[in-house]
Amino acid sequence: MSKTDLEAKLEAAGQSHLLRFYDELPKEQQKHLVDQINVFDMDRVCRVFKEYAHVKPDDVSKLTPITADHYASVSTQSKDDMDRYWQAGLKAIAHGEVAVIVLAGGQATRLGADRPKGTLSIGLLRERDSLLDLQAAQIAKLQKIAQTAYPDQPSIIQWFVMTSMVTSEPTEAHLDTVVLPNEGLDRKNVHYFSQGEMPCFTVDGKLMLQDKHRLATSPDGNGGLYRALQPLLPKMSELGVKYVHVYCVDNILCRVADPHFIGYCIEKNADCAAKVVEKIDPFEAVGIVCAVDGVPRVVEYSEITPELAQLKDSADPTKLAFRAGNIANHFFTVDFLKNVCSVALPFHPAHKKIPYVDDSGELINPQKPNGIKMEQFVFDVFLHSKSFYVWEVPRDLEFSPLKNADVAGKDCAATCRQDLWRVHHHYVKAAGGKVLPEDNPDAEVPFRVEIDPSLSYAGEDLEPLVSGKTLQSPLSLN
Image (cartoon, rainbow, N blue to C red):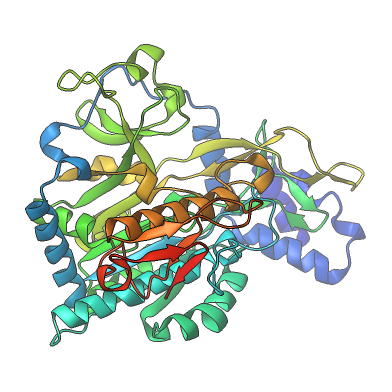
């Protein structure tokens, strides 16, 4: 495309300012800018901004909780029910019918790290202690458990890793050189794909330059999964996959390919499901899985009136009526994904601090939100479900995300490792063991207890190792 044609294209889209530094750029940088502009369908991205950037929240006056017959809490399940769900999930894993998708495309701006959060050291006792290390070890352990239970079956979990332009290279390098060789997974069962990008906008709809020859862009949100996944669905079917567990990379307590969750969904014939944690504080900044006009969806905490947020459950006044806290942990059938991956999903505006070059070419790092990133959400497909279910799990056992730098004191590496040590200490005590606290008065926490995922997936089979024994923290079982 000639410069004249490009100028005409951008002028028609109201974006001619993108070429204001073009004539002073070296040829190589001119080419980079032109190529990047041509990647985007300008009509589409401008239409997305116009349609969604300033849209008002939906009317949620007809909000209702998910009905009790489609909502199950681990806390109220019998041992027989839990065992049955586990066996159903494990059988599907053994038959090679389960894939997992890790959402690892986020830019981790709040964390302030120079690498993707899934590759960072968390500071555990374990030598290889990235989130991806722990997740790979869980997958390997589940495959072994399934192989033992069903020795004539393949017992393979296909792992699909969704990255983005920013995270793809370091994430794939970390997995290929560190994680997979050491955690016992076969590279042929790991599949990389990248979500799309969207340009960043000023509040009045102008695309932003990150520097003179580069647009400011960002991943298109975790809902970009569906457009990116669509070309891979035939491969999933060829591999025999029927069920998919989708989770975010940042939850250190995530139970990857959780047989209980998968088995529950299989038994209920769910096509789509959400794993949630109970919301205790009515004003906690977490989205709620609920129904609007009888259709399942996630409603952001800011969209719910104080009266609805504080409403008590009529069947159990000790609990909130709207308590299903969304943790971006989902189940889908492959058939459901085939239906929704071609559906045009809405975009949502996120007001962010976006570095940009001003009219003089100087790089500006804003101190407050100055632009808009357009994102899609993974839960926006819920409304297409014909059989939607919710599985509530204990927050203290299954949810501890890495979002912030340690200075925040919340949802950071320090709280992640402390939550993991606490859960593993719980497992040891439940198996009949006793752990003495640290001798060091300056220790980070009194108990540092780690159980390698290769030894136990979620606290099972520890009795022979710890029952009746007094152990000393720091304790590493592997």
